[in-house]
Image (tube, rainbow, N blue to C red; front, side, top):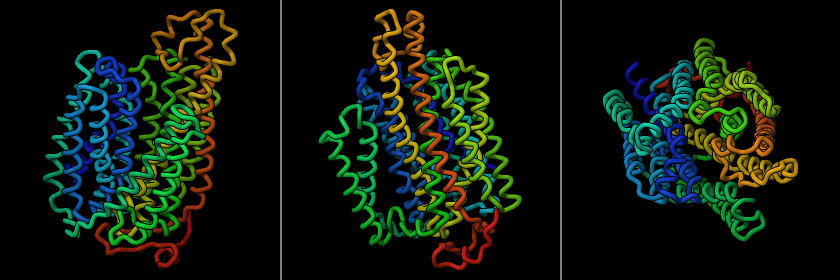
Length: 512
């Protein structure tokens, strides 16, 4: 079991580490390949592809078996990494990043689905806690590794570095997962549902990315994308209700706890990933941290998150109770985000670190608990699809959070500069905010520098205010979750726990 866990942890590290390593290299990549208008899509293409692919990989695992689909996803991810490193222009890089994202979607859902198949739910918490503890290592080590590679090697090694880890993960999983069930062997893939899912998700992300920036909200492009989103979503629901093997079985949403856990996963993704994306802006522009050191400054949040993730998993394994964790987690997450919203230009790094601890404690309570609740609410035959749906919702929340909160940040920042530009006695304050870098900021006169720092503070404050509001709404969802006893053994027969028509949940005591 130790070797299996190690292989799964390495695979999870691959998926989470990639964006963290690539981020410090992006300015150098842009200078080498050009194509400023495609820069955002280097990240968006990866996230979007992994989000769309997640439920597809989950269903493929149900049909074909976990081992073959998981190993295939690792291989696709590694092929995408090699091709990214070989890219000659930004269009190629964006396309190959999307290929990487397809593989990454299988890595994330595969790890959780395999754990669900080999570990009883009561013991699963501590193993999922270990997997969630990989995130702090990725978020702290990623920027450091990426910065070192960019400064001392070549940006292409930011992608090639995945190869040794991937080969180890392939070898370990090939041998240790050999005893996993082979699946039904009847690969009836819902390609129509997959295409419709891809269509409405892509259109929705484009709306949140382009609305108010590339195009006006009332422009034909945005209105057309909105109509496409609604039409494709309705068609997707109709197709999934009739499909023999739906890519995302809508029946899992009939279960009260699954729907609530999925909703909470979406809110967590929106508030956490959306909000945390912009904290480095404050650290670098206002507090003067370097790009590499900003990764180290996240350590208080990551360590506290890791501690509560591991402790929460152990608590669930020992007591079998989990309901209190999402409640406490949402309270702490909302409190941490609200504290960040109060930051000013004079906020010290020590105070910021204390805010990070609060937020990290909340995130640690939520990350693996919501997945555990979702998995425990689905019959074993649908565990892969349920895991994929829950992961999809979290990633979707993160994608929309980055897009929507990014628009809020940009609008607030430029509005602050416009309204306060009169206080600067120099024309340097009129430099485009989009072109500003920490190095350029340090070269500006003090008045212009203070003007931009105040604008960044206003923008980050608006982002965290909205993120805190969204997180506070998650408390209502968390309070509605019922305690349903965890299945005792992973090998149990299907135990459908549909709140509407099964005795398993109807007879279960609702406790904390």
